Length: 58
Image (cartoon, rainbow, N blue to C red; front, side, top):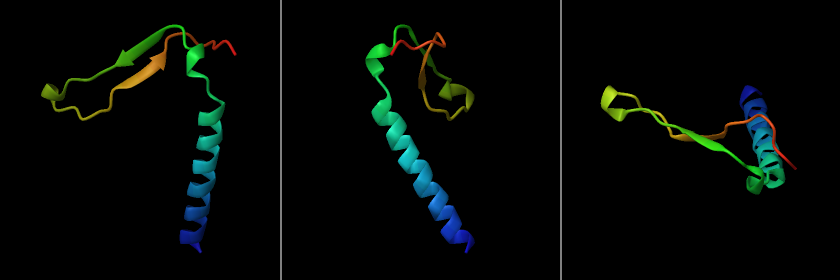
């Protein structure tokens, strides 16, 4: 039962992510920043781009 519920929620999450990704317009980005960490310090993170301002113009 728990396995079914977990798979159901993962499936619903994946569907909603697809809807959000399809609705997103990358051309509306105006100022973009990048967060990087140093692997020399033993960090194992992904580089993440992000919008510097909270407002997106649709």
